[in-house]
Amino acid sequence: MRTRHAITSLLATIGLTLALVGSSLSLTTASAATSTWKPRGEQYAKTVTEKDVAIPMSDGTILRGDVVRPADADGKAIDKRFPVLVTITAYNKTVTASSGGLLGGDPSYLVKRGYVQLTVDARGTGSSEGIWRAFDARENKDGGEIMTWAHSSARPWSNGVTGMTGPSYMGISQLWAAAAQPPGLKAIFPQVPGADVYRDVVASGGQLDVGFIPLWLGLVTTTGLIPPAVLATNPQSGLKQLLDHLTGAGTFTAPLLLSAVLGGEPAYDGAFYKERSVINVIDKVKVPAFFVSGEYDLFQRGTPLLFENLNKRGVPTKMIVGPWDHLQASSGAEVGKAGYGSLQQLQLRWFDRYLKGISDPTLHTDIANLTYYEQGTGSWAKSTKWIGPELTGAKLKLSGTSAPLGAPGGLTSGTATAGTSDLYPIPVAGLCTRSANQWTAGLPNVILADLPCFNDNALNDKTGAVFSTKPLTKAVTIQGPINAHLYASSLGGDGMLSVALEDEAPDGTVKRLTGGWQVISHRALDTTKSRYLDGVLVQPFHPFTQTAQKKLASGEVAPIDVEIFPTRAKILPGHKLRIAVQTFDVPHLLPTLPDLLGTLTVVKLHNSPAYPSTINFPSVGALPTVP
Image (cartoon, rainbow, N blue to C red; front, side, top):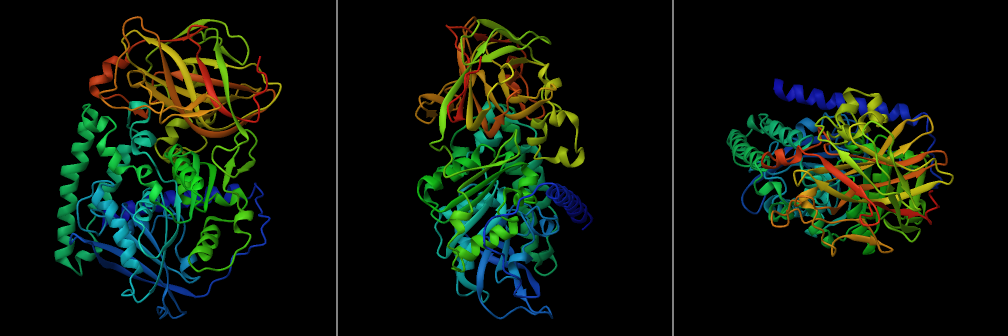
């Protein structure tokens, strides 16, 4: 009980901090919506919760969920059937119930307005039986079975109509469940879901994430080993649950980490990640979906790809992308700044329309398909699609040489000067940057708020090479995925390129806009899965397989396409657009042990007519001349 209390207190503290941050910021930013829609008031005075309800799966495993129902002023459950909103979590529903909003809002808001909330511990976590294997085929099958169970007329509180809510893991669970197309599921509301497990977070660019993944696996394992409340009422089930969870920690979590670090199968893309990546089944999702994403989120890359797929297929789909890390976007405390209402109000409007069938003729005119926070101006841009007709493929050329600790090289749309720039292996690069905060899910920002190095990358950039435009005379606006097409050689034949896209203000402050990473030996390019815009490669796709991996030969110079994760930014007149390139990004990424020595080498960047290194991006409108 002490362990549960300690973890609950920690999560509650983080959630409260996020809520306070969101509240204080909202005082300084006007975001009144122009819509005539108004949120309706409460219908019921209270809620009542039935804990650890047994939910049998087809293989005999018992999952458990908490059912929150509308209640009268005396706390008695309303004897009616309601639409059911389902959240599937791996973080122990008992713990996260006290997390201060980390589940994406207080469920009582919707329950008091005529919904039932069902929160279920995923297989092998919390109070549920089974062994957790992180979105394996059996767990993904559970999603559809849970929704079918909630839809059943055997549930006295369900009217057969269902929806889903929740961020992160709970957002991904929604998409797996929706892909099963269970009866009764009408709409989902996923916050910050991932799409491609390997590329989004586990091994961005081919190196292993050591900032978030161990933290995440530890969180699931730790909360899964807390003695469940059901132990008191059903000792047999509770004991089985504990033994299952211990087995999972010993047979899945620990061996998985060890194998990846030693350069085994989990260090490469393949069947293991294909089974766990919802992008592979997103074509089966046919229900309306409202996404929330963050420009500094763990799934900054993946969430827009999910939105794009549904949007292209004509499924009613919305996405708000804000200036948020993972914890901020998960809490949803600042969603109201987009101008459409708070997170809970948006959920109410979405589910009232698609679950209750309440007429809302201005829903899709009030809320743009895509609403994107614009770095540089603080405004919110709107579009109908992810890569819209307003975007054109653009390039800037690297020019000259970036001197170590000296003058930067150039970025230009004109004639480039030939040059070479050396990158030295400095294993502290990235240590105090926005990247460090992003890839530890935003925890440093909670604990160490307002660190100057989170908002100014100038000091970190001295550990590598910098290429910059001159002060712009006309604004340059970027939206979407970006590619650093860099020619490189390596003394040891390998290494990693960590590239930050930045905005340098007239006072010299350097703001990191976004970043990307690429291991040189994983440079093989799959052109059939890469994205081109007007013939310009803006989003490279690399296989990241052991078969495709190939080191550079001695003296070989080769193009390395670095996928830089998407953003929306306007570089204003007087500012400079720049990139900074290093060979490490700590604590985000580290090589496997077999590859470690190969990364401790000097990498040389080349730019010349023979080696035309460029930064490629979608420009909003035609790219102005950049001398």
